[in-house]
Image (cartoon, rainbow, N blue to C red; front, side):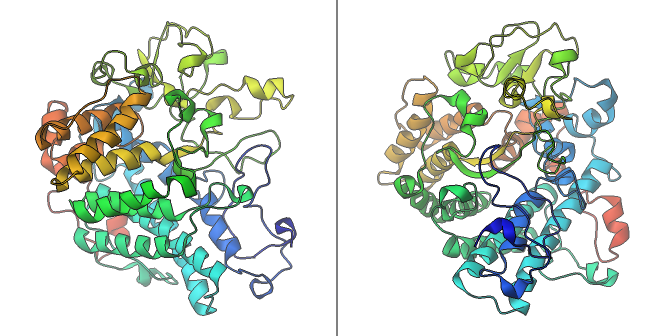
Length: 506
């Protein structure tokens, strides 16, 4: 049955295509069909989650809190790798996030909180429909797994950001249903683990090409392992990560030969993709598939250099942190008034203008729109500003480096050698010499440096520093104190829920 000829009325979130040319597996289905008519009847709702998580173009605008500036601020600005300097009108954001002057009334934090809970509500809606209709067939179990993965991912964001938060695993039908007390962070982490354990049980190892980008068993295992590592459950995490690595052939995982290609369109949904949030933008698409992730970070210039808002730019500290000859540096950093490095570094053979608003720019969102002109597709609204780029949430390199870290922390046996081997796969692509295991402390430092270089400007650094216990040393000069590991609960959330209490240090 052709998917384009069906529609579940419960799909309320705009969905996205995977590429310009391929079939959109998330296209809506005709309104006249009912949920009982459709094999795998949860498909419509479950597919809607893929669009919901990045959608900033239609109600309820979940992407505004999960890919837009509030999300980048929480996950990017607070690290020592990134800052916001390019927009003179963003001084309040700079004070709040770069300089750790948190405020309970920050509207960005409020949006971040609200939209995460809206996303959780969307996931709960899928699960409620499944329970109410007793949908337990094989396809419906996959859909349940998709919903629980997305719910776990959303809570993963929340618990890292705020600590104790309310667990809502039911449908809210009236205002009083929202009055839920916070659960201890340990309980939230356990809830995440339960959701992901279910997801890895029922998600497939891979999908046929027309469903490229749907969640997989490897994605569930990788995110579950990552969550476990925040709680130093090294052995369990290592076991899961080894299982993902053992899926390398069956799932098609691997490292792309050229690091810079990962961040170009040709690198979307590549062998390196474990979990990726997708976006697209072409003329006449109604602005329903795009994302603000790239737009908010692109070069803030004028004319043909008006590529975005420039709200996430590299710091001097990051630029100085690379080893000599590390290929990742030229694929990560753009310089005002300098050559972009050419095609072998992810450039276009162009020289940036002499921009005074920032010295450095995030090259991982440096994608120009000339291809649309060449194809006769025109320049639709926001097309020039990176609105079509996918968000690489978990790359295979992350699996390898997390496995190395977990193995090193477990220690004993061959774990030191294994850790060095996984690190060296990543270093080899970067053009760097191999390392050998000498002792746990030395390997720990090596892994920390590798994670910074590999995931620079990819929203990992702040939370890595916090979980390693290194945040005060690295971020203290910027104003960070231990209490800044958690953001205060936004005032509007407290006002809406009388059972909600402020974080103790705030």
